[in-house]
Length: 114
Length: 112
Image 1 (cartoon, each protein chain N blue to C red):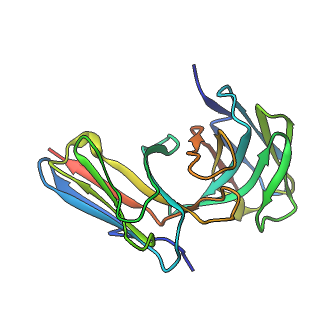
Image 2: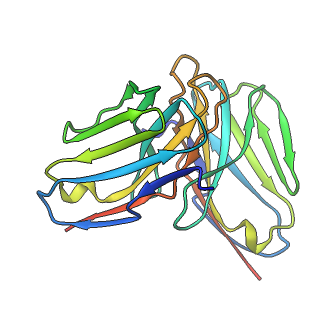
Image 3: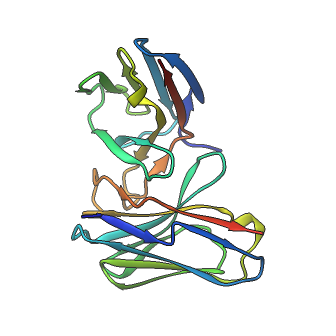
């Protein structure tokens, strides 16, 4: 019954490694997002895809590469991890890119880079 | 520069007390959403307000959108421990393709 699910829940890795986070939604939504929540709990959008097409790409290092194989999945690959990448990453989806579309979030992936 | 400033940042109150959380900006938003986030989980939508001056009630929670659509408030009456969490406002600006801007957050703790 989980609407937006992301894996893994926790990810601990060393600097320089490459890692991926997967996200799937079963709500039938057209739009998916990646958000980053820092240690002060501030949520900032990173990417947004609408029906597999990238529509929002914020100022994010190109070490971060999202991929959407279909509109129900949005994965995030991170190359050459750095200490500053440590955060909680949230996947979300919404019904449309139009106004007033609420976001449905996954439960987050806590990434710790040592 | 944070577009949406929330106050207070932290609030610790006892069960039964009332409280108000503010979400302020110098920018105009076409709509404003309020979310609550509990530890280890993602934010969950509480309400969306879209009209300047609009007031919405959700049981003991009252949400108001400012007349100029630059600010919003959340008032909780007779707070309960189950209200504990991180409250986030999020504004949508016209023409930004559903790119929500989140506020700085208010962490509420309600104790017995």
